[in-house]
Each structure stands twice: as structure tokens, then as C-alpha cells.
Image 1 (cartoon, rainbow, N blue to C red):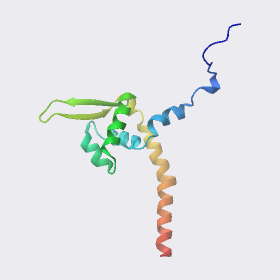
Image 2: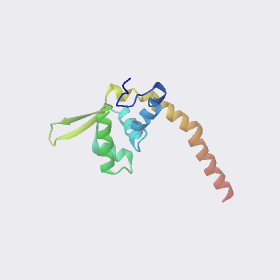
Image 3: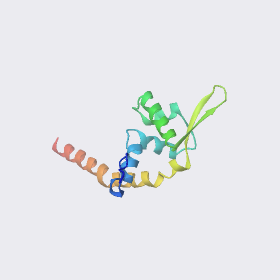
Length: 126
């Protein structure tokens, strides 16, 4: 019997859907970019950079390119004076809205409240 020359992928060895999604949305600034684009029809690069605060322009460019390659973001060259680029979410990108809402709810329940409690405790002991 002839053996295959490439490894056979068994169902248990297939990548987990969470791992596959995390490779895209788990990168720094990615969810924040999608979140900002959910709240607007189109945004210019400089608007995103301003809203995100400390993001490096190179990092923002890289994340937007990756999101565009993954089909989550659409980049549109606007030929006005001066010409500029606008970014918006595709249907695939907009489908992340409930995911971001759940993350926000979870954070409010477990992260933000814990940070507030720690800050209050620190104030009482000061």
C-alpha cells in the first residue's frame, strides 16, 4: 500500500475556530479599530488614529491592511480635493458587532468593576 506524501489531517487536528478567529481579532488594536468603525459609516485614517489614542501610525496601517486582506474592512480611495482614503466595515466586519457587545458586557461585569473596586480600596487606605 502506498503511503501519502503529505500528512493527513484528522478532524481532531483541525484548527479550533476560536484559535482561527483569535489570529485575526486577537492582535493588538484590531478589536478597537473594528469597534470604532462600527460606530460610523466611514472613517479617515487620521480620525481612527485620533480616536484610538496611542496607536502608532505604522501599526494602524498594518492592522487596517490585515483587516482588509481578511475581508473585514473596505478601503476606498476618495477622489476629492484633497484626495483621501476612507475605511469602513464590510458585512463580514459588521458581523463582529454582537461579539464586541458581549466582550464589552463581560468587561463591564468582570474587569471594569474590579478596577473600580481596587481604586476605591486604594483611596481608603491612602
